[in-house]
Image (cartoon, rainbow over all chains, first blue to last red; front, side):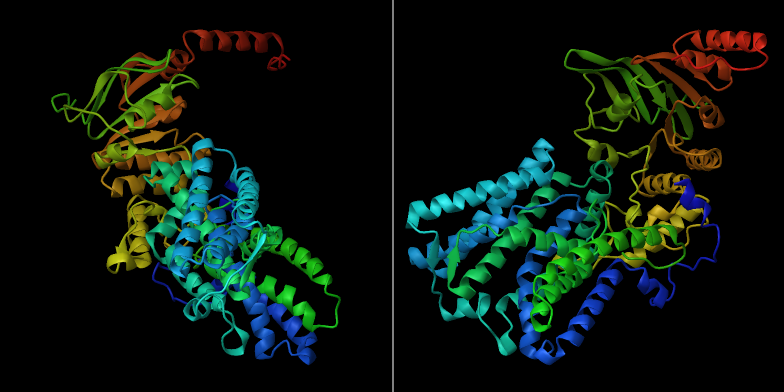
Length: 351
Length: 275
């Protein structure tokens, strides 16, 4: 505390209604690091993948599609991380949602609307259980959701075998459902891309423009003070866990309808991909800081590396190396950006 | 002094027990508008429980609380806040990674727009926050977008106090506001406490630093093992007497005497620390 204060007796302060735009201020925004990282990675793959059509519409849609399936979940996970929590049960929620759609619609022949209702109802319930367990027991959410990750994945497998005798189920859906959740549109963009963009816009509003965003930051910044300020912190946490589980269900639904099938396999890679996207996107692991735009760029960066490597002459396995190094750089940069943001005076910072 | 007006907040013979453990016994205290009541007590004297009872977190087991002479019960901190009791905790309830404007309005955000599309009004929040803080004499804060983490500890405390006053607090409970601060910053906070009193707030100032209490207090109460051990007005007791009281009797003076005696016989060196 005292160290920070000694360094900032300097500098003429600008009034609150200062110029709305300046390059220096832009550089101190928390998502700037994520954006620069994305541009850098994109430039790298654009250069090395140019000959193999990385920049073509289909090259672009290949990474954007991958980004969308992760991104739909990554933003709510980012919210949870800003609020000081984590949810890894999404790795089981995605296959659970896929199987629930496939069993309801494909096996029992129920209308898609009913299937969606069941799937999202289940997801809301899983999220609610996560939230209740975390708020009532004070067990760290990593452990709680690790438990529900295995519980949900076990239950999915058991119920699938019990109800349908298989661990994979075909699913045919009507044209409107295909178009809405799982079809290839112009230039090979999947329906989930539009869901991703839509969710990013809505959740940007929630986090940065609405009063609730303030509550989420406060919850992650200092739980006790947030409670004292009259913020319903338990309800807010439960809502965030429900949002994450339902986002996982949306991503799963899109995948199942797109591929016309579902399997019970738990998606462990997705858990890591989401966390990487969020951290590369500049969200602080300890909570209280982060932006939707940052997570958006972080997700795009991850997808560019994972999909873009196939368009370059490099070995595919190197993508994991690149992601590992990137993650490390991102965490170090996050610390630097945070220190800059708190110690520099008289300028616009991230909201 | 102003003993004819009803106290803003009063506790009458309040007991608080958690199961079989009695934490507060027969606490009786009152605080008037424009008066600073200093609650002194060593660690574990029951200060936190008393604050929590005052601010509506705990309900008294026995006894009653009165506001403006009328009995009140609070179901939670929010209700106490609505009645005008604001509590500023040790670390001020400020969030280092949020802007000054957002910090100021946490939980009571100003919005513009309509229906479900209400938007946090950043410009209004920043303008009000900066003005409120500057009125309390913190002129260094001029930009509401600045992150709170860039402020000094004293400034953050002052922000929290200015916020409480802005939202209509009549009783200000300050929980060890100067404990973690350096001398200069503590002086800063004490000035803010004086300003709050000047504006007619009833201030309950909890501390274990006698110097800080003496600087701003009008009325003092010493808490020992959950009971009020002494209750006196300004200038009725010296600093040493208060420190002795807080430590639970004459032990402080004894300790000082023994150290003095030791130093006399050892050429001014303090006794070595005993393992």
